[in-house]
Length: 357
Image (tube, rainbow, N blue to C red):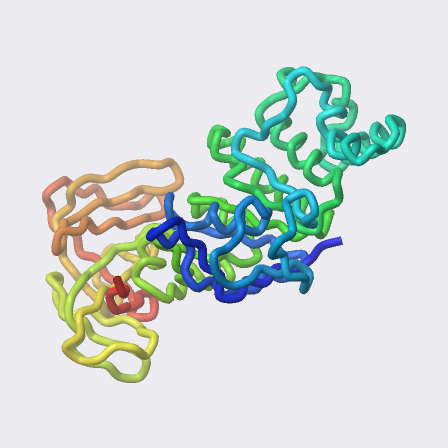
């Protein structure tokens, strides 16, 4: 079983401070949905409101169409996984998993049977009699997921559960979390500041900034078509060229920048003379003058990352220009300080106005 979540003009105030402002959003039943944003943007506050640990100061939250106001955490169809996992160190793995069932007064045989089923689900068969300390970090993470699933929640809330793991383990756990969500069909609501996690696992992502919902979209659409300058800057890496709009026509605009006039697509909200910024991804820049937008910048340094070579040039108007190039084996040798000729297509760039305060 799973349920969707509806936020209707939800606000959360702590005195004069507004942590979440006018949030209206629907999370679909059975969806893997992520809230992405920097620390302090309101994403954990949203999770705590869904769980019932705090009540919104305005608006309403509905799970499965039912208004949650006044319903405590123990009576909501939710379960939550915290950053520190909070496993009981002196309980065996199966007892940790079945703890919620024990609270519900299920007998030991049925608790053990359910724990073994869930160990199979999270790919830990035969590990039930171990203590948590005998497991790896990734295995303990899966035990925490199994424990949350034991009470058959309709919504599983995950508060940056991978943040304490090393890089390779985090990458592996992303795939495992997504696979578990698909097998169970439970609605997952995931909180993270890690863009790679959000883009890799989610059906849709909501980007938050200072308590305000900036954009909700599929990961690829969020990356390729940011709605605001904040989203363009925060999601993935981007080169930025500030300037003023010279002309607007046919879905494209020309921006006068410190690197010269540059052309890119826009969202229909630009006027000649207005301040704006052109964003272009490092992987969309090319060596040479093959595309319409061209610039010549001094090379600062280059870094080798195996399958990729990163060039860092500039700065231009106070910003470095970063280029990601595939290590094809035929890249030219470029000395620091030498001029680098770069180009990119207008379709690969987007011009956005400044964000509102």
